Length: 418
Ligand code: EPZ
Image 1: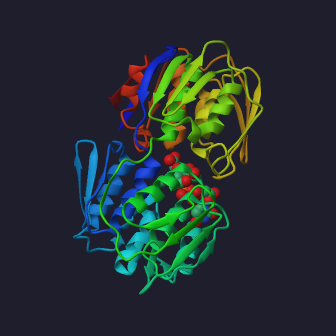
Image 2: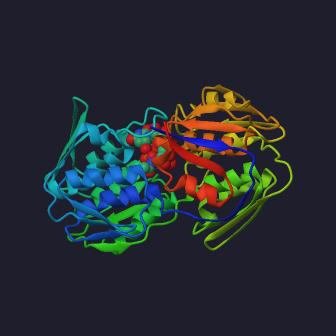
Image 3: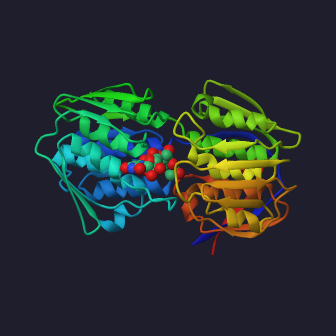
């Protein structure tokens, strides 16, 4: 077990190189099962979720190795279609393998996925989509079992624009006979990145980002070397950190376009923001002004993965805010921890009512999930006095070199064994 010890109050200055996107690399790792040629993912982030996904691929018989920051996956010797409970439970994206394993082996058997405890996280849309492609599905004893002799393209309408369901269906449809149309598909930039990867590997996918994705099944999928997009959620997290602490930082490698809903809110908070090509500069000098409301929505709405960090910022703005979490049922678990630091935050169902206070006071706080944990670190950085953030393994799932990057910006943060 490890914790962060943070002495708050330092302003943040300088540049931070944004990592390759966790939520792009994970579905691409799943897609690597579709080809028996080598796939090289460039500059993969050093985070636990990616390491666990690589472990899962290797337990399927793939040979995945790190070469510097790159991951090379050779699935030619993949011979297993079953993911045991222990591994599947480590992360949500294990479920993304249902599609590609069924496409490759005609079978898949995966225990219900784990991941952040932020809500019910059903997989019904994944399963109903695969069924539309001809997959027979059984669920028993905590496992999802898929079977299909031949995938056949079809039209699929998603009840809600699920990111994972969209990706899972895409990863089966590329090997289906004929055309598949996915309607009400998720529009996140990571879906466009997956489409780009698949087309580099010889697939025929179009429409990602538009809400309707058309996939033409192909016989052969080739190996490919690919640089996934930058992590827009990591970029947003650093920008919110600078807004909370004051100072001026540049997020390098990330596109402002992918988090325009966040930038709009931060400007309302009183930050000066300049975003061009793959650089976002944020400067905060004066006081923070609260925004009336923040509502998480599927892309291009405000990202749920920045909700916790933005709520922490609201706690030290002048005025009141209401934060509504529309995607996940229990994504405010960090609120009691912020209250230990002096925050005035009341959670009722999917709403957090925040009354801004002057500042946070340092405290000992416990991370309970990935983004909630990141929000606690940001609160501690902006707080007066010393804080300890416990259970930081949650944060390691999605932020590589987090304390190193923050220290390089002037934060006083160290990781120590508990
Ligand atoms: C992906 O999770 C991301 N994870 C999440 O990021 C992100 O919060 C989420 O998309 C939304 O943007 C990865 O990409 C690995 P969803 P996913 O399916 O696919 C409902 C992080 O912090 N739903 O888009 O699990 C569901 O209940 C993580 O990096 C169904 O009803 O999210 C939720 O209300 C956390 N049935 C909504 O859709 C289903 O079959 C959005 O979930 C699937 C989802």
